[in-house]
Length: 393
Image (cartoon, rainbow, N blue to C red; front, side, top):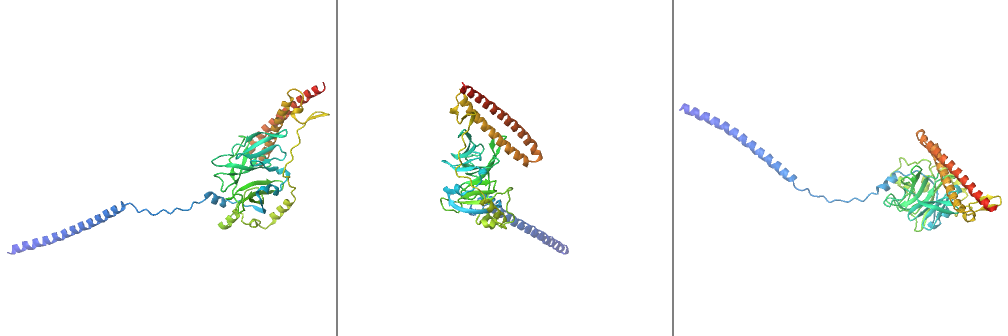
């Protein structure tokens, strides 16, 4: 009996401990199942398509316009005046060396000081022609400017005295308004103009900005704009050109935008001394007449008593045609001399590394010009000799 009782006690003890182990095992299984269930639920939840939030469209930002504001050029504006757009040329004073700007049938034109070179706008492009006798001939489109997808409707040309720097107005994808003012320079090596650049603010706006002129002799500049003006009118601004481009630094955004839009020219005066000096220069300008007198007839001296003024005056066979050829050669020589003038100006401003190349170009041009002048003299002698031979018999 004692042994049976001991067996029962031992067996009960083992069963009790087995029961505890079993309970621990079952608890671990329950916890594992619960974690697995939660994980599966989370996974299933993540696979559900996310609810799309409504897209709020932002207003388009004119990045070109905003970028131009940030790079607004620092310019002193002297004065401004409101005039009918049709009268703007008559209100601008500039010295004779600046050349002449005219309103023509299809657009505006620029003519150099001596009246031998003309750049005119028509058909949305700029064309150049040279004076031969009393007529502008050999009209060619200026290469490198017109691009229907970028820049078109070219007008209002103005060429600086260096014969290389050209300003004009145009529309297109690189304009922030209607007409914007662009600048380009002539590349003598490729005989084409470089890609035009928008000159930015404050000269350009969301209106039409046109007719940019620099009078280098008086150091006075002009441009016209339709911004904030009634239909049919423009505001002509007079300003002091900068030799080196300057921009505003550490200017509050609101103030910078006002300067870019030229809301108040007095904000550009500083202490007023530059403006006062410019007003004196402006008063002393003897204005260029609105219509350039036609150049005198090209004359050809035959002898002390005889002077011809046109191709029809020549008597010897072929001399009329040779005279026309002579005029073309003279215009070519004028072009070479203009290129030489520009190259010499560039040479004076160039670095030591650039001067070597420019020096060779200048020497080449000088040789070509000297040869052209020699050929002109020989042709003049031949024409004069044959005419005198005929007149003396």
